[in-house]
Length: 513
Image (tube, rainbow, N blue to C red):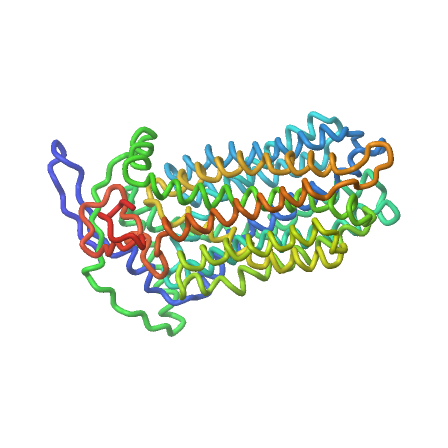
């Protein structure tokens, strides 16, 4: 399936011609792909559990029978967790491109499991905060490694719907957290200083159950090919093909014209930066815009949702989970229902449509909220409808940044955009929290104005709509295209099979936008 041409050692490294990417893309969906999705996609479930429980257990951790944390320390722990995600993404993203996807998604899961177990054993404030940082590092590192691996192991025909559905499972984790909260954080059922510790062990228990399956996921053949392990890449694909043929699956022949030719060389940080700035600056702008806008919206709404229910609708703390559960359900269903259209109607059209539609619905809800025309129930119903669409939009942001950069720098690119988005998005809860606090009379605790918060919702809608506009004009039509067509490897020598029609403004040279 491949041929190797040796060149004199004093001139240039040997060239590698391979059909490995084309062979991976022509595979039918199989049990192998289901194992990849389950073993690697669990990261999003774990993050949903983490964020959901962290937002729910704040009041519990302030109790004198637990850690007696102050409100400021609780806010600090949330910020530290997000900071850990950023540091983990940047550090492990670089390592995932250097050392391989498989090594890193084993290491990052181990770090998360270990850190969360330590958090459950916390006895002081600062031990709790420090272990939250380590847990965040594990989750952040997972994002860069697993999205690279999932995209590189999934056939082009299914890549969009798979990536979007996996990102949407975050809300499955949030639903688990909401259900667990009703039991584990209820002192009438479980002692107050035991329940929150058991809740923190929920994610590690799920992670440990997936650990054996993750050990059998192979290294990405695309990564192997571009890092000088062409024989290992061939062997990895051959094993997958042999398993399918043993099950009676007939595999199509691969057109030799779809071979890629590479010349291996090490890529340092300087070259990574040079490639991103000179060839992929527009794509960096696209990815950063999509990630920042959805991050700001979600952090603004989700992290202050409990405050809205309690301060504006007088929902008791013990009943909050009943409202979070349907909200999370709408977010979970959206990517699964709408995901396939990103592969059929197309990336650019669907991303623009989901961003702009959710923004318009949010603006309508903001107007209703400003006129005091909503109840806790109708507010939740509207959130469910809005985020059914917005969840698919947010998931498509992760899909976009994971498929529009070359394989050699894919994980680092994901990490860079993720870090920027988290940095900007992390400001949203503080902004909205201050607005919510100012809406109440300090003396009576009664809500005296809705206008500032309504205007903040209008602003969030405008930000999300801007993301949709950018997607329309800068988006990449990546549906059902090979990753090597979308972004040829940095080490490739010519790409005769590339059809660079990335943008509605016209074709561009391979590797650019």
